[in-house]
Image (cartoon, rainbow, N blue to C red; front, side):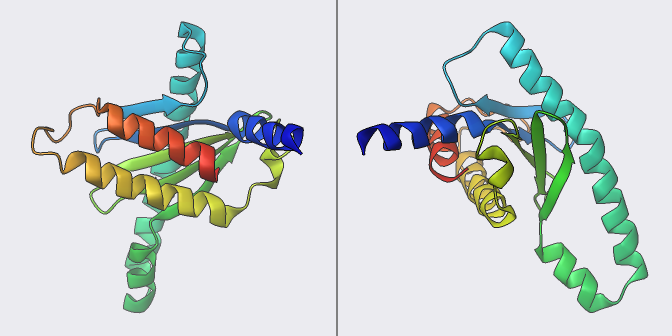
Length: 169
């Protein structure tokens, strides 16, 4: 019984690679991953995954905006409320999901598709995790000492994000 719990935790840990908060001008405000590997190669690969997702995210945003101008008012209101963009793209080893706030802050979630449970991740779980990440981001920027547009360096935010990733995705 104890071995099964350990195995489940290690699968969860391997499934979530990183999360990122990207500013309006596509500058990274926060890029964090799960695990103890903080080598330069690992950090660069995380940044590369997030930055390659920005092209797909911008394309999805531009097609959403175009379809909103061509559709009825009710459809536009529904699309504005649903900030989750879904699966942006997938590679052999990773799946990248996107979420955008009303203020055009972009949230990116990268999962591993090579782990046994990585291919079984549900869209609803990713949507919930990104909504919670949005709430954590809102709490972090409500700090009166945080300047809008600056990187998020709060250890509390980092700890909460890592806890979210381990518990949900």
